[in-house]
Image 1: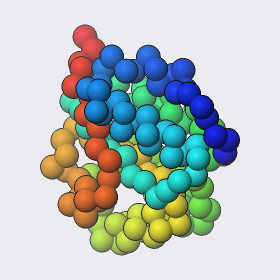
Image 2: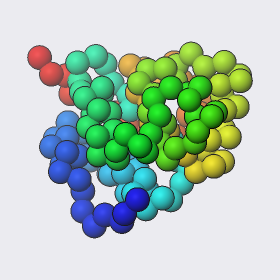
Image 3: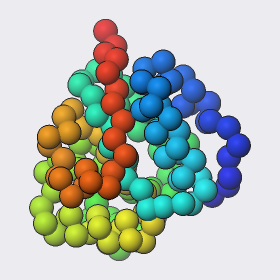
Image 4: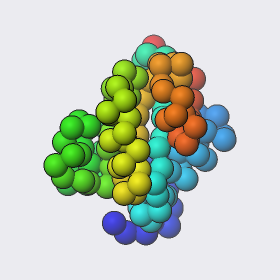
Length: 138
């Protein structure tokens, strides 16, 4: 991965839809991914129709398909730099939580979305960066 000097273009267009502190946290996460400074977990919280899934799609295109998984079980056989879980972080069992802990120990970045933070396990919330998407597209 290369070191980036400025925000990726896809991220700049999302700035108006975040509070300033949340956007800065999101940008900081992107910088960490490209500088390979981890581990880090990012949780994007927001109601439906606010762009969470689109943002994850653009993020995955930005880092490249060879650098991420979207299924937790795939990480057991082949570790990649990023694990992208769209809403699947909500119902993790203890074995899956242990896998995530191990992945974070190996500097894997984890990105997930949820409609409410209450659905995310407390142990994950303790070390995750949480950003809120309050805007709703009509």
